[in-house]
Length: 394
Ligand SMILES: NC(=O)c1ccc[n+]([C@@H]2O[C@H](COP(=O)([O-])OP(=O)(O)OC[C@H]3O[C@@H](n4cnc5c(N)ncnc54)[C@H](OP(=O)(O)O)[C@@H]3O)[C@@H](O)[C@H]2O)c1
Figure 1 (cartoon, rainbow, N blue to C red):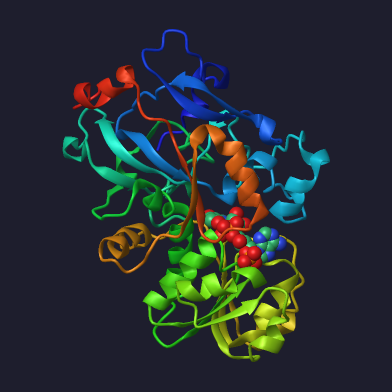
Figure 2: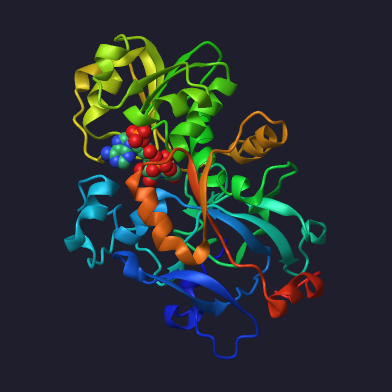
């Protein structure tokens, strides 16, 4: 996908002068607190060759949007997202290395999860997709599947916190199911990330999988997706969420306040899927069997951990860092939805304009599953899109 930020001045991108159709969007203006989220009118994106325009029907809330706004990915940050969000003094700091990959292209539109309806395709695109309800794969292997280079919708280019979003046509996946738009909006980032770790760690039938943060978006998806592969799942969750996590399908649930080594036998786990990290990390290696696999794509409990190298090499452990999604991951996920093999865990929806309220509630972590934002319905000028859009000249 072309990175439009390289060629178009940032100041001009949201300029309304001369713009034919506008949309509501949340523009994130820089590193900082909630004051950096501006709900306003911006131009509807113009398609380039190979792109499709979607009406956003539902957009899930993820940590990455908050991490990016706070500049959490900067190596200067040593605490978990929660602690950083609480630290008011950190609010105004601009961090050149605060994006997940490199500098974030502020001002821009976040929103990694998109359930949308295709309203237009660039000239030469597949017009048969117009009108279809789709999910967007937000992780794009920008240099092909043989390279691990990847860029992300809503981190590297505009995302779904808007009425419309444009994406590469190859990243849209029609979904046929009876789930609501909001339920589908829970899926892309959390379930894609979870399935990618399970796929990379080669979780198989009969194996024992331990998952941390199991009440959260990724963790609850790991519970379901590991069970789907026939694994036995031990989950770690907050004490008050234990019963809900059990109801997702975990065979055993341990409170995150307990010492994991005291609750789960040492050398008893085949695969740890850990997006919490932080102080509990050492115990994760203790419970792994010889030859066990540790997979992670996050560190909400703290990015700096203490590693006893003896646990690592004496047990022949394998550590698998996961951010770039492998090719089968997203199409497989869509098939699991269509075959009724997984279910959504929708905690609550909010109107898009109440994003601050949604993100505040999200960071409190009292919920199980996912929060989803719903953009406002289209007005009459925007409704014209589906009719005029069989092919937009790119
Ligand atoms: N690399 C990638 O592409 C990628 C993609 C998605 C997510 N991630 C990362 O993965 C992590 C988890 O994502 P998610 O969407 O599952 O998050 P989430 O929905 O916020 O869930 C995280 C869960 O972790 C548990 N937790 C344990 N210790 C915690 C602590 N110190 N602070 C906050 N929560 C803590 C909480 O559950 P209990 O209260 O039950 O313990 C919380 O519900 C985040 O760091 C996120 O940025 C990375």
